[in-house]
Length: 282
Length: 282
Image (cartoon, rainbow over all chains, first blue to last red; front, side, top):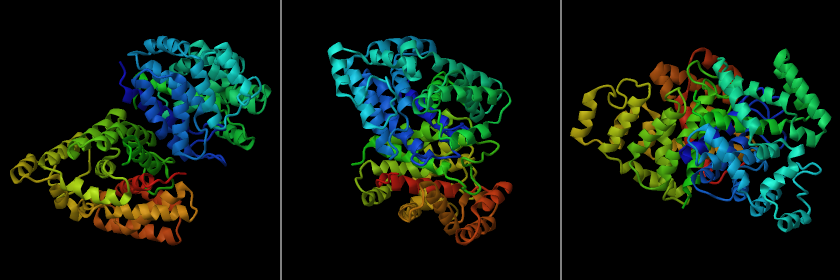
């Protein structure tokens, strides 16, 4: 079985490596901050969430409660609020599933059980965590978080957190990961391993991974903040950059347009967690 | 009393913030790696040492054994060996002293007890940690680490780890911190608080802190690697940069000459730990 300190360390290092890769077009990275959130906020959020990942990796706890704990721990350590919401939604079930695993293959199997075992209590805790930070919510997204009747609906219909993710999945890649067994997360882990084997540095492998995932999966955050068309346009550009473009130019363009592919960053974190848990060292 | 997770989190975030500040003349930072050690190695080392800092902050353990544990934990998570040796020598007693503290004033008092309570067993563990990583050792530095008679001398004369630090202190700022109650560490914490209050960003405050400490305390690592004269020259240049110079130019010069003020970086980490433990958030 993986050790809880090791599991939580993999989660934290995944967050640190992701935010540190550069150029990571459009997102906060070590070379540029946003007005309301800086690179240093991400460092503090990564440190602050470690104990919650360790808790998830140590004993069976409610997934919804762990998500709420992690969101609050992140916000205790820095003032920029929602730094890692999507990453936490992936990492909490990953850490919980890693607890009973000794291999990545077992991790895959256990992940399916972990999300299936969620209840309506988990869904309610998830909504609380949603409210405790500012999260961008599109229409028809995770029911309507600001509507008290959503909570009633969860209770009356006894919707589990997995049910809520099912409802949200048509428009949300993180929710899709939950309902489909985290295929993009594991796919990204394979890509990362491949890039490292090709001899790319850790930093360049992560940039490559980011662009590849962005090119294949239109970014949920961009779709919600702008439109599906913009998300598709950005994915097409990422594909172009991978073939013959300039990542620095792409970065400048996205930053200038305030387009940040935040969901892709979350997927990269999930993939890095899997790679580190599988034994990757540098 | 400070919580163990909080204490260890402060140690880790101090390491992350220090390596992330830029330009930090001559050292690895987010904009430049060395040939044998990269920014990503420091991230992994910071993550890997957290459980040992938590152990130090949770119950009474031998300081020498904790130092050995931390050095080995760092090396388990990355392949560049001695990333944080000096920082660990400061942070382990700081975390152990924080365990029984509720204020920075108590931390100061408890630090003196912690180092006074070391024994020859601690000194021997310290030597083991020294040997497990490549640490630059000048003449007359920490006795002679490669000489078996040093270990015999420790046992025969019943030298404590504090005694060893006393012997090394004329030529080593970290050893001086041990024997003098960590005055530069706490002074740096006051400076950092002052810079933040002046309205500098976290990143710029750390760069300023680094330059100020470098200007006042000739860097031990530079003195050992080159000479006392070079260390004095670099300190004088740091003072000049603070007044009217260009930190980027200074950085380029030191990098070109392979001069890295590593001991100053260690002091900055100690100071940041104190500031974070005292409640600083951003």
